[in-house]
Length: 138
Image 1 (cartoon, one colour):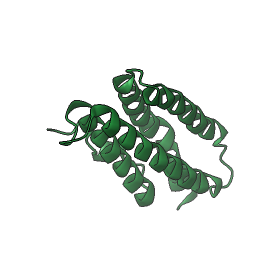
Image 2: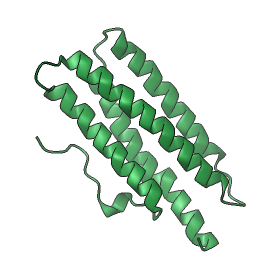
Image 3: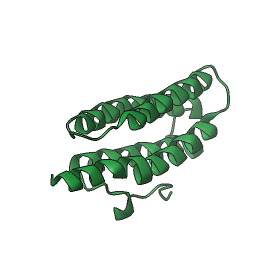
């Protein structure tokens, strides 16, 4: 089965650590999609989705924390709206994940939300981190 979301250089923000974390998020998202359409033998779709989404949420929390540390280290740039986007994302996926855990069929809705949000966030908001670092000469 082919990957749904494939990393390429257009997603790079020019910060190796963050780029590597974004690549890992792409891997989690692809794994989530695979769990939706073809769970591993002996695993129900529900169990596969719950496990994959749990891992995705944990890694996203870690990634946001690391990204926010980097943003806080850049003097003279206000990233408050960027950090607010992270909070909004976490709130939305928590709400959707609660629905998944309660048996509601929102797994593809959750996948579509994460995929769209992640791509747009990297291409617009996260690029601003790389740009700010480049302007500061880092």
